[in-house]
Image: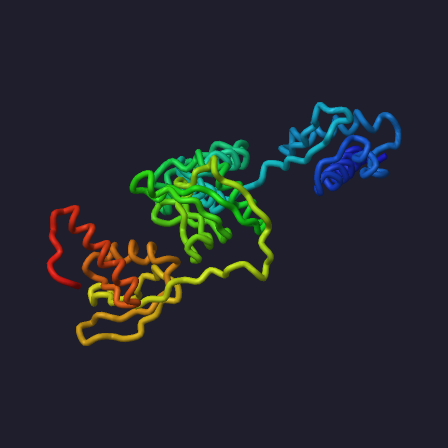
Length: 321
């Protein structure tokens, strides 16, 4: 027998073992059936498989064996090889999702599994401070709402309607019960929002997830696909001051386009926003450099918001706007 024959046989067994488990866990009987002729069809196959599992673990490929009877074999994977670009990408993921993110624990555990076997040089690259950062750091700790978000995601995937009580702020009277059709979950203004069509107001609204009262959450029947309400944005126009209209304009809204350039250098922009709340809050960031023009009902909401802001600072509103 050639000198390298034992190695060839070992590699053949390793390959067969990994191929058998690639599609999912198998109990010992099913695994031995799947292995075919790669292992002897005798009682010696069982200890041989377990020895090969240990050898693969030394190579960084983990196969977990349960303590049940019969034992279950599960391929957990191996230690992947990362180049410097991969390590910087992993570090970016690490630095992007802060401790207040509802999935911070899962992300941290995943990164630990991926990087637990890095060598000293690679670990130094991974742990080094990254100059490029785009942190997703919620304004409050959303980790207690991880279970609710997971349940909402599951209900969205199954097309189920739900009911819940929602506290919109401003006292006990602001708590209302809603029956909604779920659309998606979005993160903006440093909060997580459930986008849903509510049968109370018959419009699409954004519900801040930390204000949904978890104990009141209930799933209802599945909604027929042809009855689902499609999400529709709010179309509007606003004026942007010349100082901000030079060069490329920030795409803060969907379907945004310049429809008119004024002699002053200001521009009139048509756009679409996800909700009236989002539009008003986003335009307020521009301070006096943006003016909401149309529609009239949305302009009235902006005026009311500015008046409330003025009242906070003791500025009395004089006349109409």
